[in-house]
Image 1 (cartoon, rainbow, N blue to C red):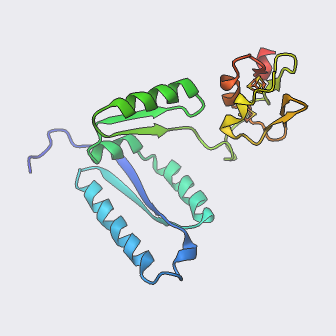
Image 2 (spheres, helix red, strand yellow; image 1 turned 120 degrees about the horizontal axis):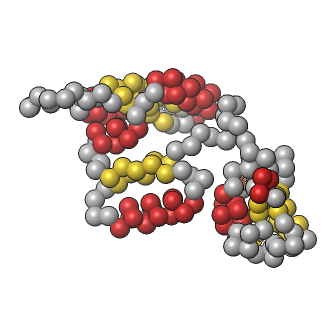
Image 3 (cartoon, rainbow, N blue to C red; image 1 turned 60 degrees about the horizontal axis):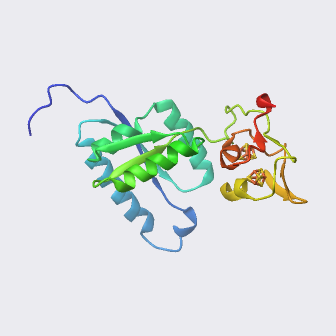
Length: 190
Ligand code: SF4
Ligand code: SF4
């Protein structure tokens, strides 16, 4: 193999995901998955990147623990994708529907594999600050339910109008992007 002139500096994190309930039901399943996991880790390491192996995540408790470990390790997901041979790697903000829509259309039209990374901290994490709840204007709302397509539990239709549950709304603004009648506004816009 030809030595790289400039050493790769990317740090990638890898973990295996499964459901612990199945370990006792299927003999050897855990060992099998961890075997594949180990092979995958070696394949990525062969690309000259720094690999942090977080092992198996098979419970919600472990998921939270690994999420913190990943944040602390400052891993580079884009570099992992490129190390696996993906040439088209892009990052989108899941709160920006137009950006996500454009990215999905462009990558589906591409004639090579691509990865779209949807990056934003989970709204349920303790350190994530929320905006004020969105405000529904009942005068403008016609009850078309377009804003409900995202399945947010904070939105309901009451008496034919959108209603926002202030105890659940994080003020993300995604529903407002779906309302063509401008009936959903961020608190600061009102
Ligand atoms: S999309 Fe707009 S008009 Fe339609 S129900 Fe939601 S708030 Fe009302
Ligand atoms: S702003 Fe976000 S959290 Fe609030 S109702 Fe709309 S989609 Fe749900």
